[in-house]
Length: 152
View 1 (tube, rainbow, N blue to C red):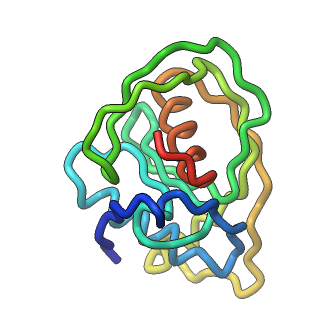
View 2 (cartoon, one colour):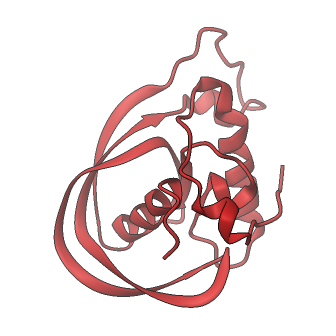
């Protein structure tokens, strides 16, 4: 379901709560909302009114990805960046890293697209690690900042 973007600084400043398999609807809402916005490349759950640690982003081929409970394990190559955000109007100057390694929980694909196939009743989140660089790394770092309640 497409949700309205939250702009309230107090709501956006609260750290996210851990996400579970029961929060898959948040991931689906993130994907739906992101797809409805022109030029959207990433969103975090607190931007659509959820307090769960869930982010969605587009990769270099514009394919969507969801990360639940993302955490940066390693960050290399710091640089200064200017970023925009759907939750506030001002451009922010931040330090980002060119290459990161992230751990996160992955939602089974059948749960993200329930109309495509039957979702198993015993579905579980799967812990993953991923190395990202460039634009994708920047998007994920922005989303993780949102999960921490950090306003850039």
